[in-house]
Length: 96
Image 1 (cartoon, rainbow, N blue to C red):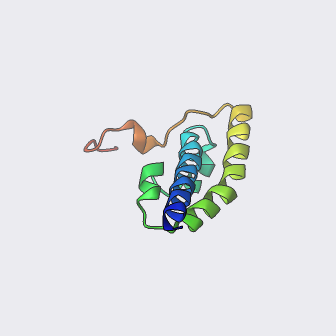
Image 2: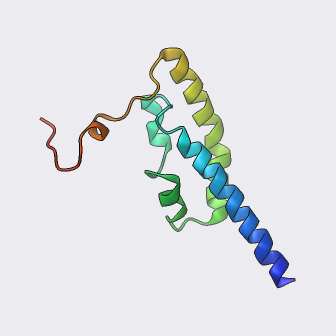
């Protein structure tokens, strides 16, 4: 019985990781005003944050519709694939 529960938890963990990776794959396609939707720099960082899996799953469920809507609006507005200004500079370069 314990092995079955461990397998089930591993499967749930994989599904949540997959959902999270999909959401973060849209990071540079959302409207610039909506980039604060993403709590972390990457899906992996989000997974390592120490948040319970249930909280991450809830975040995915709540966030995906907003991300999808923002990507659609960005496509209409023509503002996809724009990074924050800081992202165009390598670390150590001063912004003047």
